Length: 182
Image (cartoon, rainbow, N blue to C red; front, top):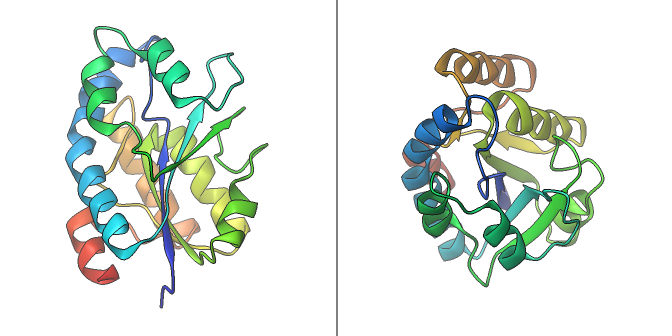
């Protein structure tokens, strides 16, 4: 059973300026409420909420700088709803996995975490690689299926199936995960 879980919010501070980015932004909007409900639950339990984000070539773990850089007509409404609060952690990452080239593993160890709930975008890329690296580090993994988005629904579904079958991730919806972790 989970002793202490961390909520990982991957790449939600996003500019969506790439092919199919507008489509991904549309699917991402559907994840905001589930992620915010999870975030509220984690804050109530005094469990860590950790944002891990692309650095956009800025190479500074400065949330205001990255938020300003990523904000545009498509992304601003998403960013304003989902951005980190003062009590949240914020890390930048150089590649797809939130673990690769970051202090995430050390931070989780220091915080006494044995489980991670991975949320964000893109489900079939950065969320998947993060879940894989969490599995390799022997964390219990939750990937709430309503709290991740990919450029296409079929990519998201395939990633969820792989995380559930190969990585032993629990992919129940966020409301069910909140009940489990209560």
